[in-house]
Length: 432
Image 1 (tube, rainbow, N blue to C red):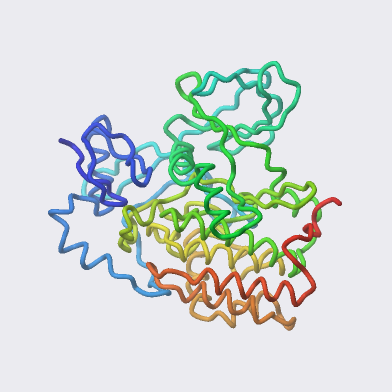
Image 2: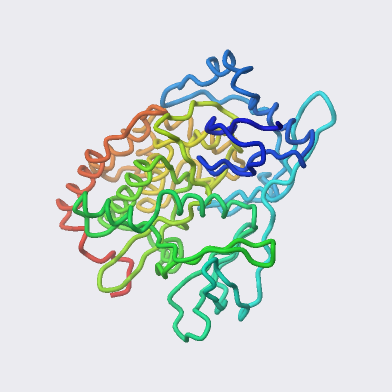
């Protein structure tokens, strides 16, 4: 049998599985031949029986500031990461749609990673698994790996839903897996009632399906526009009051998904949506990188190069993600800290860099010196004690440590009230 255990979470698998049912990761399959074996070997993913000693050496948590090591894999990205050809600094994303090269004694081997997605024509109809037909009304956004459309039910003039389109076996499968496991409407409603909340920004997936044997799609209720689009339209920094409102809502979502054994792993303004209606609703979306960090209640071990490094929005991903370690709860909280600083001050020490390793090196340096990080971002301006406390706490977390969500949110919420704000107030960037 070619494969018995998931290389990411260690779950036992049947030999014909293509994806791990526990964490959603795609598995090497027999069709990959020696390439899949080469990837597994290069990443140290041989069977647990053979690697017990090695795992004991590599799985120790190096603390909040692990040392950077040279990865075993060299990757050719679909974009040029040289300093001469710069990517967008704010929220630049690495879509690994090219080839993955595995270094070894023999000639380098390559495997395809994330297939690019060709958009469909507006007006085309897609059928979900329940037989409902959806018409593509308008293309809203497009990247190398996904396309977003405004859609309507066939025969209806109202467009109150959006459709995310991706490759059949691409990252969108991981998002579907997360939504079906951890974001069921009944589970979300139960959490809201238990915690006496008025709202929780988990997207409502109302349908999914396959199309033309090569596409997978998800249907969501309309969630408004992305925070990134608001920032680009307004072209101004957010007030600390607005940043605190956003952070409290995002923390609520992170607390929920972490309790359900998942991390988001790509918190940034592109994945935050704002519904501007009678009251402002803030959603955390984009779960294509979601990872089940604690399957069955057992936290995954720390191991660098166990996943593809640098995945997500380069400016805001955690140091663990840069180094190819599986993301944990601290990854999400650290990404949120970077976002808060950037939204309010417009800068981070690595904002002008585009090479992933250089970005990671600067993040490493400033994790060791939070006061210097805040000084770079704020200059001589005052830093609120709540923001200072949150950033310091996020950077000090151990890999498998359970964050004190109540204390973190309580500190931000108290500062919000002291500044004369509240969670019920509309965001200042919204149109009133």
